[in-house]
Length: 210
Image (cartoon, helix red, strand yellow):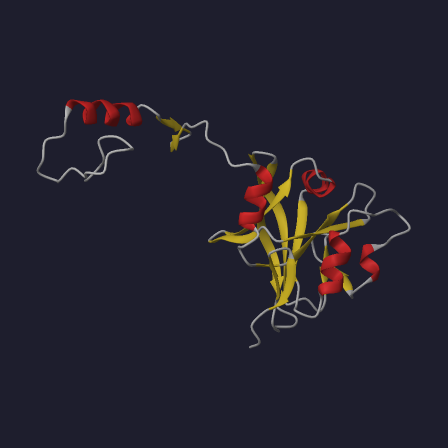
């Protein structure tokens, strides 16, 4: 294993070379910054990236678009657009979505214990924008656009989505100002396997046509 004696040093230490005392001290200091928390190795650091800059950098990652739906306390439907969605495991079947911890959607999923992820097609930008709008009240029914059905959990699923997954909440993992919501998939379908809707650099794009 090769390492530098100090950050400003230009010379690498060869595998058979004896490092200097200063190199040993640096290696010891760096090793001391490692900790074990819940059996996970971490590095403690005070270095952070400014949030607006990080948002701009992360916007360069292209992702699909889903509408996450759940059940309100009064039995009504609720949903929001999200892009931080991913598959987690096949056995057991798990997916996750990352939501702002203080958001209404996060709170409602915690309360209902169920949610569905609806993958949007390239021609469903209007639905993506509708559910992304922060303006919502009883008179503005987001579900008025699109054809919606009710899955076994009670969450709404888009009947002409590229795909949908109906889930029971299994875990909530705090992660900074967000919460990673993990769900066990109870049912899933691919009603309309067309090109997906892609979100990149704060803009919707049409996915690859199959």
